[in-house]
Amino acid sequence: MEITSPNPRKIYAGRRFTIRFRTDAAPRYFKQPELFLTVLTPPSIGNYSGKTNVQQGHSTAYFQAAEDLEVGTKAKLTLKVRPSQSAELNASVEVKVVPLPEPVGTGKGRIPTPNVRLQWVKQGDKVWRAYGWTPESVASVKTQEDSVDIFVSVANKRLNKLISRAQRRDLSAVETLKDFYLEHISYYAFIASNRHGNGVSQDDETADDPIHQDELKRACETICGIMESLFEMLIRRAPE
Image: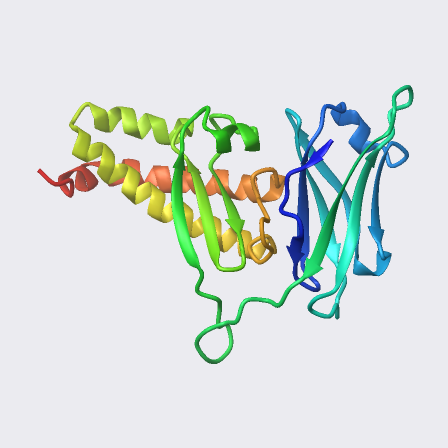
């Protein structure tokens, strides 16, 4: 077992956070509390949500940080797997409480303005494999202290139908459609990520959050439907 989240894992008081790890252990072990244990030392730092997703050896465990933690507080988090007829597997990481990003603007609803980077992901890329994506996958958001990375699948089957249609015109038509899709799906992914509480914790990756991904699939259907309706107009916008 190997923890792949940064060490120390920076978290925010009162916020959800994740720990990502790699393991050869069977997925069924992580559904049984007597076989999969999480140990926080001291335990007052937070608690395990009871949810762990395992996809092709790439795994994510979900935690909730306690309220009113002081900035700078540190703790040790250990994951343990105890197969019935094998040696115990374990891995540890330090967690550290850091201050929330400073908001900008004034009045209610003011939000941080991070450095947002949009990145296409092709089938078979490192990110694709790490998230265990399929042709139905849409996007994932990874938020750090001073930046936000939004990974968008260019191999989504709904998007690919439109790309194939545009390819019968010319390359500029393809790029116009891709630009439209990337802008709109990234915006929705970022908003949805924050709504689920994922967009505020460093390294909080939403690729394997079922609720979040269901929302993104619906957004994909909506955006692609709009692109189909406006196909000819979008194509005319393509540079000659």
